[in-house]
Every structure is written in C-alpha cells, then in structure tokens.
Length: 71
Image (cartoon, rainbow, N blue to C red; front, side):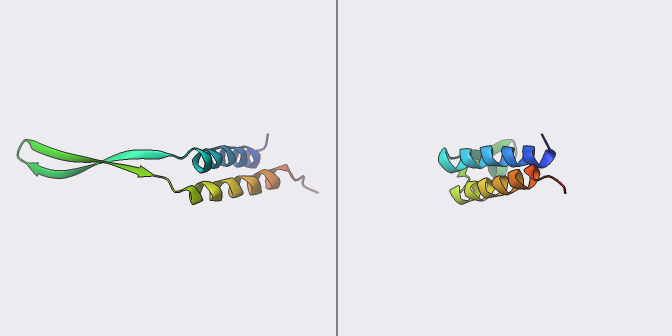
C-alpha cells in the first residue's frame, strides 16, 4: 500500500471513531502551590465531532489521491 493510502486509511478510521464514538482526555492543571502543598485540578476535555468529520473527509481525499496511478 502507498504511504498516502495508509495515511488516508488512518485518518478515516480515527475520524470515524471521533465522529461516532467520541473521544475525551483529561488534563491536570496546577491550581495552588504553597511550600510543600500542591493543589491540582483535573479537567476532562472532549474532541469536537466536527474535527472527526474533517478527518474523515481528509482520509477520503488521501485514499483517492493514493489510489490514482501516475500516467
């Protein structure tokens, strides 16, 4: 398989996962530091579904571009 086709397939799969299943991650932020005392806050963030749709479209474009033969 060509590199463009592989990249397109990967984008298609990841974009479809984000679009249909959703994807979230957590990040930790230091809120307060006083001496040895550390207070952190854990924040859950989600990847917007429109980003998954953009990845799916980009994956399709790369798959089509990778499958064309050079004339």
